[in-house]
Length: 339
View 1 (cartoon, helix red, strand yellow):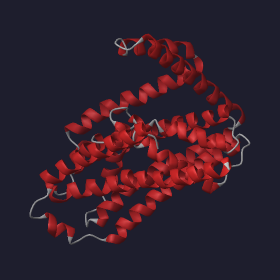
View 2: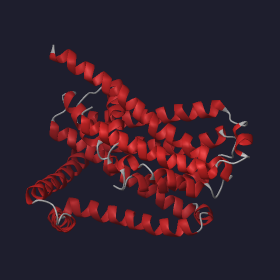
View 3: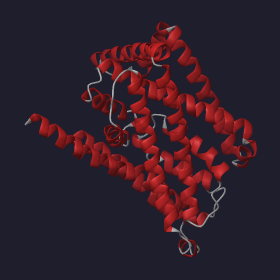
């Protein structure tokens, strides 16, 4: 890890810790100790194991999608690839830093760079489709749970529908009319980077055009020649998100609280979509405040801060630990190959 990466890791962790300390300061009271006495460590351990299972679903997705293009990748190599991606994702907005890591590791497994890029891009597409589908299901079927969130739900319903509609429109245009998408992206980029130097803006525009072309070619490739990979990919994508959502309910049970399965399903969907937006490195602060605001409606204020801390430990700090471990394995592998 270079100096720049370490700096962003410290910024991301530091901001997250600061927000968590503030949350604990305002939520811990004389009743907190009573709730802590009801902690069931087995459910908390199960939450960690479920999160590991989530990573296994991700690894299987990469393995199956690669296999559909004719490349054989071992499960444990794929799992280590996923772990390595977690560290970069934890220090970049919208977890975008994980994509280059996955592409690099696929390339090291003898997957050509173009196909590696196609696999990773299609992973993002499947995530978007899965979240949009789960959000639509939640809004249609779990209306009581949406209403129970009050004003927050009304705002988030509006935001999610924009997100879903935007994803579908972009998906269609990127396949059928990539020239339109390029023009829109170029104009937005020029507007948002008016104070940047010309060289930097030009590099960003070239990169954006290239990614749009990669997206189109990846979609065509999978639809025409690797449909099985898309089917497996969608299956493991759904399993991934359901498993990730269930983890929060297990933590609640570990704290002696009701699992709030349906309510938690809605909240975790909202948080997942918020965390995909490029707001802060690793979504630090956004995730903590969002979870506290929504879960405080359903669980006592005395324990909500502890819950959010444990939730972030499992889904964020544990990810960083796995990413560091994986990075060490990769560095040792590269060192042996260089000998």
